Image 1 (cartoon, rainbow, N blue to C red):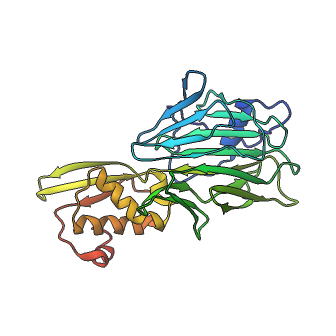
Image 2: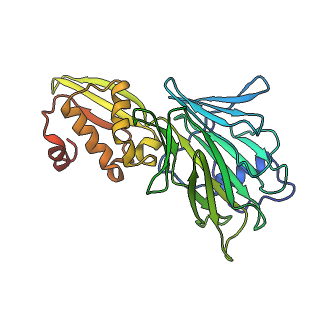
Image 3: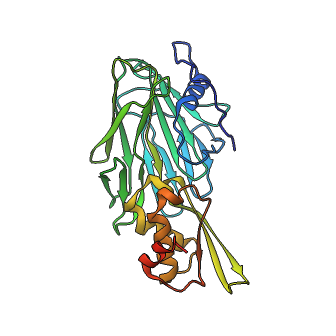
Length: 309
């Protein structure tokens, strides 16, 4: 695994910028998602793609810029294209574990793809100046019976035929060369997602934008027996997508995923879980959500009153 090291945002993309320069530029200005972003070092798969094996999913980054980047686990997979309204050269791996696609038509500086250890992926497109296209078109590849929706908080969510959340795109962000926020939002047409970037006279280029694609809500579950209380404690480790990116629409799917990874199915554990999930602004930075099987069921509101205990 490789961990990006912070650098000064004074790095500028220019005519001579190469893949490593773009990777450094992006790392300098990308926002903190509230949890440490650890990159999975990309490994070459022949000459066709770079594969990053995360804790719960696999990210495959193609060499061909016309082939979509895919995220998959044992149950499902979703892919996302590079911006369709720009042209890029073949992907090149950099020393920090990212894969960079440089511009082939001058409409952007390029795209930096980061594969993360929770099986998510971030595509960060760098706009070099006002002349760049500020409406970036990404196409999602989803299962045949899936539906794609734009939520009220700006996320794009992919639901399966059974209404389970298969994955989606977190609320977008964009920042300029000084680290200042730039207004941005998604619009949706079928499976085409357009990120609109609204700049102004004070915007300092280059501007870095992203779609962030995640599918796993729960990274892992560990169960330990507590001899003092005579029962089991389940340590549930959400991914960043599960902690806050997916939002309220993922509530049922997150519980279902926790059960599939080892949490027992009873009303007390379920209500403890929903208490943790629904208070994510408070519990986001806890390393795990702890569910205790020896606790009698107080009901959802009872656990809320007891701070999920």
